[in-house]
Image 1 (cartoon, rainbow, N blue to C red):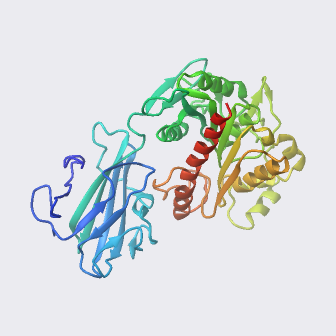
Image 2 (cartoon, rainbow, N blue to C red):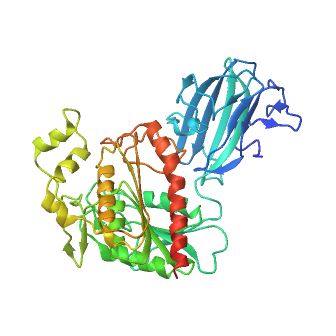
Image 3 (cartoon, one colour):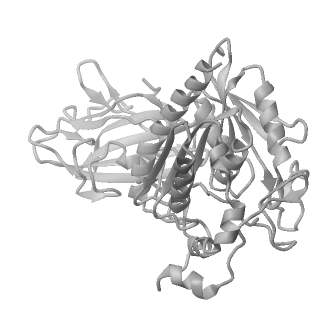
Length: 466
């Protein structure tokens, strides 16, 4: 069990006889018990939550406060106990609160940021989220419980890599490496092109046994137009990013002692998914590709300071790309009279069939399995449509490896790990990403374990083919 002082809050302790005492030792409606399936879990693992000892049909409110270095999140759900005085979150639908369908993890994904929250992560737990759950009857707390959710499994090692011009972080799984090494992944973030999103994904993958190299492939200049410290040698903006740089990262990963060079893959999201597919098409040693919000073509770069150009370059030369359409009538047509979003610009641009054909990524050359994950309500770019085009091209070429496209209704551009707050995902600071909090929660709950299994199965197959 967790120590009572973990949060600087009152933490209930259930005694062997079932009595619940407050930290001060006074009785607190001993017949009511708030049970959580575990004291410590990974943040992408579910827990079973139940309340018992209530009167039949009695109302109760469950509240959650979750705190980490990233801030404080709060949620609530009101229930009516069943005929035996119990509430099981897996089966019970809330009658009030921040979500409304039976869901054992509903209080986690439906949480909203508490800007006035004062609870902070305890010293020594910077890698964790601390959670306090309380059950209230008529406004009084009658039971409480606590747990710690780790963002990265204890024992995972993070090593900065600043060699041969690389800006990357290597995450090594906990424990002794197998004799042949861990299966290994090159991890690429999105159009922010820094390293933070790639590090978050790589840390999660390392927590599940995959060595992962999170790699920044470009950098956005600061407010004065100057390169960020340590990023001076990277491409500034997602424009003419040299593929040779990524190949150096792949070579580093392939040669690292605890990485199994026979079990290599690449994982990317958004622009990183476009890049991942492009790399895999020319590197047969990559035996698995996981692409979240993918693209089937190379797009125009996102830095307009020197005029339009490709996102990617090889041998100093721009790769063929699909330019952004300037046909406002066509773009408005895709909006259908509703509010415009970036996805309408991308859809209009895809109408140029000649440019699309020239810029198509040769996914049929990928020497391994391909997993695509997309949201059908993606408002940043049409990732589900582009994923379907990838699958079509692979089928036409009789691709001999597994291909799976997971496309989710109600989800947008930002599908990630499950059981995180999804309330802010439909909107970015300056443009909509699409989807609903519920849609994201469902997509993440389903796609994440399937992606992990996909990696395990197909990298194991690559090892068997040594």
